[in-house]
Image (cartoon, rainbow, N blue to C red):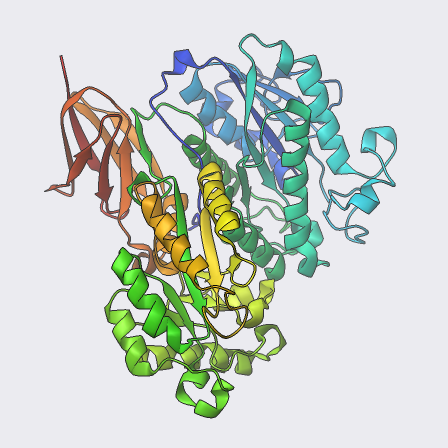
Length: 595
């Protein structure tokens, strides 16, 4: 069975917005190579799409009711959508399912700018591609132009198509428009350059977001990017390409990855068959229903616990003794808990401590019992990118075992020694964990009261999860010039705790990944509505309570039940909050409004 796996944290917001009140027209961008262009015969379209065909023999012609598309064209003109390949009629891809389901919900016109060409890579030059590339490399882009202008850049073809659509059609729509998401499937043709895939894909996504921002004057830096992996049965599958995809989804809070590892293929062992294309299209829609302002009776799942606007995790490397004697007690006094990354060798062997006093296992056990996270930073702080498989296993697994033996809590996260990592080791180390530290900002010698207060403000502006990396407070690597800067920063954060979640790395990673991966349906009932959640993650790692939010005012009473159990609700002036089990089955909500 194909399963969906999405990682990282999301910023999409769903509220109670009546569909007929939507002033702006919805727009999607879709791009990629052959599995986005489509290679499945229209004779294998789902029956509900066949019902829209005017040709009931080959299903080559027909029209959706609301979806308008500009497909591989540079004139900015749209036509009614019906599944069609770039060159040949009668072929369809996953997006046909996505658009169908979306128009059933929207019941109003929406627009798609699509550009897809088979056999194309991001990396250039690529001898498995056909001389056309998606690369966002600025030096290469400066030397070429779009395909339509005689060049080799598919990315410029896409942005030219977007610009034409905006200039010729979208700006003329009554009420304006909004671009909701960027849909993508690609990766097969980059199998010969897998080590650069993460950087190349990230650059492409950033390029499109930045281009849209410059073109429209609207901030699209957080535009949702929804994409799928390559099937492992694909003859061009490469595990490092998939690892690059997963890393991007981990690092980018607005990138949503759909696991197509078990996707079934046509006889060419390259292209999705009808069941796989249908599944991918359905999952694309499920994610769109989260990130677009679609009416869900006012229900959404909070991006962060208790619907706080941002989150921060304070992490401390190398198990210095002052982490136990100064940091942990100070954080506990404020009601905070931190994450302490441990190198077992420096704790167990005084000579390995290099003259820097370290915590004891007894202190680490006490910290774990107090609610702090004690986790893995490698047994001997070795560069994991330079280790052979057996050395890597020992560096990681031995330290896991040691921490568990001494604290009673098995580590479910990892911090890369020296911040050295690549897609290969990330893929290996993340197995069986809720996350590893792949992004962070430094707290230390360059920190001042002013720049830290500015950074806190940025967390709220971006609605992000910030991960602080700290070593020494008074001594050790990059220690503070004045420790009071750090203590004052924590006091400042405490004053904003009503809207800022201060959690351990493990707690925030588990919540945000589960929140992002969760899909759900909402159906009306006579007295309210029912939410049916669905989560395809490892239940042993990600069974964390998620915060449900109902954005309705003037509520006199609300009752929420899941699995026959009544859930505790918190009624606020503008919303109601409750925590639910993402694996716990349907959630029944009964509302009583004030008269």
